[in-house]
Amino acid sequence: MKAGIALKLFLVILAAAAVAAAAMALATRSSFQSGFLGYLNQVDAQRIDQLAGRLADEYRRTGSWDFLRGDYTRLRTLALPAQPIPRLALLDAEQRTIVGTVEVAEEGAVRPVQVDGKTVGWVARTPLRRLSTAAELSFQQEQQRAAWVTAAFAVALAAVLAFILSRAFLLPLKRVTEATRRLAAGNYATRVEVRSSDELGRLGEDFNRLAQALERNETLRRRFMADVSHELRTPLAVLSGELEALEDGVRPLTRASLASLRTEVTALGKLVDDLNQLALADSGALAYRKRTVDVVPILAQTLESHRDRLAERGLAVETSWNGAAPVFGDADRLRQMFRNLLENSARYTDRGGKVRIAARRDGGRVRVDFEDSAPGVPSEALPQLFERFYRVDASRARANGGTGLGLAICRSIAEAHDGAIDAAPSQLGGLRVSLSLPAAQ
Image 1 (spheres, helix red, strand yellow):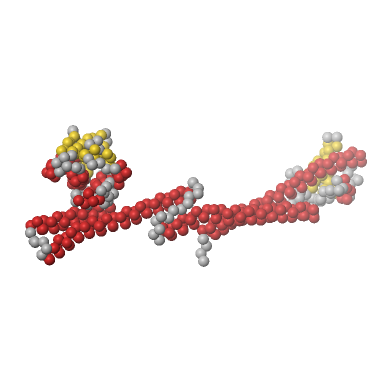
Image 2 (image 1 turned 180 degrees about the vertical axis):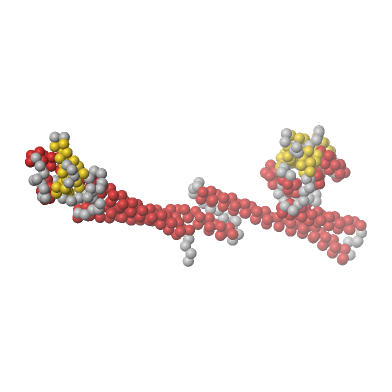
C-alpha cells in the first residue's frame, strides 16, 4: 500500500521536528559542558585571588615561605576548607616551585602574591578541563536529562501538530479529489464547498468554475444534438412524405412538386453547410485570408445583392456611411457575415418595415450597425441570440426558413477578426445588431 500525501506530510514534519529537537539537545549539551566548565574555572579564579591575599598575610607575618615548603595540605587548608581548590601550587618570586605541582598553560591560571607592593610569590592552578566531582557530574546529567526530555516533548508536540495540519491541509484536497471523480463520472452538477480564501480555497473556486463550464458545455452539447436532429428530421420528413406521395400516385410529378422537393433539399443543404461552417470555426480550421480591406464597399456590394430580397418583403433601406472604414480582415468572411445579418432582418422584420445600416470609424475601431423595425426581441432573449439554434419564436422562425445558425456564424467570424458583436433594442422598434472591429492602421 502506497503512502498517501497526508502520511508523507506527517512524516516530513515529524522528521524535521525530530532532527531539530535532537540538534537542540546536542547543542544544549555541548554549550552546557563548555559553559559550565568556564563557570567553574571562573569561580576557581576568584578563590585563587582570595587565597593570594591570605598567603600575603602569612608571608608578612613569617617573612618567608618556609612555613609552607613541602606542606601541600596546609596550602589547601589556607584555601576555603569547605570548597578546596584542586591542582594548586605555590611558586616563589622567580616562579620556582615551593609546594605542589601544576602545569600553567592558560592566561589567568597564575595570581601574584604581593606584600607591600612587591611580588613575593605566585599562586598557580591547573584549569578544569572536565568535570570530576560527583556533584558536578550529577548536575551535568540532570541538565542533559532535562534537555532530552524537552526534545522528546517537542517531538511529541510536533507529531500532534503535524497530524492536525496534515488533516487540515489535505481535507480540502480530498474534497476536490472526490468531486473530481464524480465530475469525471459525468455528474456535472458537482461542486465543492469553499471554506477559506487561501490557495486551497482558490483551488476549490477554480474547480467550481471548471465544473460550471463543463455543465454548461454539456447542456449546450445535448441541446445542440437535439436541435440538429430536429432540424434534419423536418426537411427529411417532408421529402419522405413528398416522395411517398409521388410513388403512390397521390401527387402527380409536376414542376410544382419538383420545386417543393428542391426547396426542402435546399433548406437541408443550407443547414448542413451552416453546421459545417460552425464545426470548422470551432476547430480553428476555417480559413481566413486577411488583408487590409474597406468595410464600406463590402457593405454596399452585399446590400446591392439583397435589394430584391428586401424589396420582396417590402422593406425600405437607409444607409449611413461617410469615408473609409478599413479593417484587417477576410473580405469574403465579412461579406458572409453582412449577408447573414441582412437575411436575418429580411426574414424577421414585418412587411413594410425599415432596415437601417450604418458604418463609421470611431477612433481605433470600426463600428457597423444593422437596425430593423418591429417586431422587437424581449430583453431577456438578447444575450442568447448568438447561440446555436436559439429562436425567440421557434415556429415563426421555421416558417420563415431560418436554421437558427446565422447569428452564431456571425459571432464566430467577428471573434476571428478580434471583434465583438452584440444585440440591443433598436430605435426603429426592432433589433439592432452592433459589430465592432479593430481599425486597420
